[in-house]
Image (tube, rainbow, N blue to C red; front, side, top):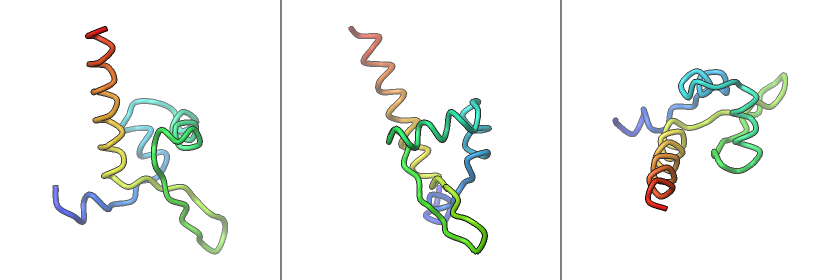
Length: 72
């Protein structure tokens, strides 16, 4: 994955589809500081976006957490 792909900004809906969950769940992860996001201001209203690299980091953390749980 090159730098441009890592910095791609994904919508909450795109992240939800990728993770196989609802947009509400993604927003809860963001507000609970489990998933990093950026606020993108536009003329209408601010919107949340997730960098692809942050989504991948969230995935790695989840995998590591599940591995630790399996060892306990």
